[in-house]
Image 1 (cartoon, rainbow, N blue to C red):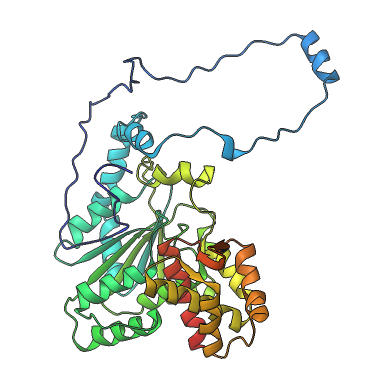
Image 2: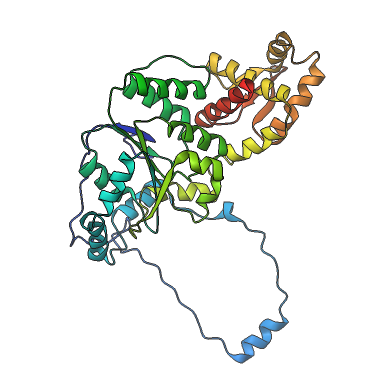
Length: 384
């Protein structure tokens, strides 16, 4: 993380802010601390037939090494090298390709489809960030836009809805469920809209933070708001599998192949932590799979634990205290029944059980963003 602090995953803007562009002829060398150029040296020796015969006699052994033991590049070094554009090939061709979308009427087609009530889904090789930002600058500059970096793991669907509600509908009302909040926004957009058009841009809608079915259902509910238009990008060939026929129809997608062949600078910043497991292995999709196999009572126990820890603004709660809360809600009658409901959460490392000062405590192991998303799922389960 840079010294400037953590970059927000959701950004609201009414005007396009031009980013500082590198010069076309700029081609800096990447140097290490000693002033020497960094490079990759690949060398090999030709093997003789005698070596092949010896290799045939060798016994193959399975390596016990895994990805967690790999040396990985820090986020700062990753960003530094990528931002210096170490692969400047075909720069002019890439710029010409980007310009062609705006000169041949392709972007006019996108804008007309948005005004007709459809939502745009862009796919193709290369990052779409510069493409979408240029489109917003040239076509929707006078309307408010919300940018969501869904390639970051800390994206929260509730945060997105809260920003739309407060900033664009002047609605600061508190809601028990996100579904009810979206329904009220839909009503407000028809009765007293503050803006004629609102544009929601989601980079990598197929990213880890939003690719769960529950998140996609909530996004499809947002798509029903008449004056809200969605522009989303996908970068996985299997991304379309996250929508079934009914959900796909609710989004009203119009798909466009618009490859840019640009480097994934921002998108790749989290790659090292994903592959080396330096961040939590818990994902919303894996937690959803666990919840589907549990009873409603077990889900209610987890919801009480999460709500209680959030109220106390701490991540742990005494097991005795949780039992009393669940007992008051008629969820458990004895501690053994509480243990049976907690065992799955502990086994899947959603909750950690530990002893402190002779007393047993329970700690929520999910990060704040993931905890909020799980709470949304649990509240929706209560409403059903």
